[in-house]
Length: 75
Image (cartoon, rainbow, N blue to C red; front, top):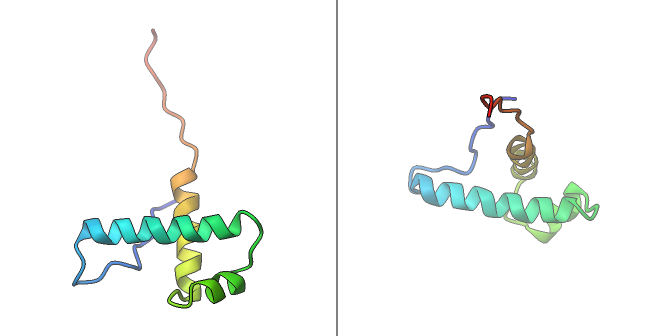
């Protein structure tokens, strides 16, 4: 799976601030999705988010949680 585009990055933000914002939004969204809240409920709780923000946060969380196998040399 390819890394999702960072929708939250703007010209006025530094990359570091944009990454921090993306992580905070992702944490909030995943914290709501886990207990079973719908996208509509999340949008009601966080009116500054758009539907695409929520979907992007879920895609980002899935990408970060993706399992990777790393082959190690013989010990």
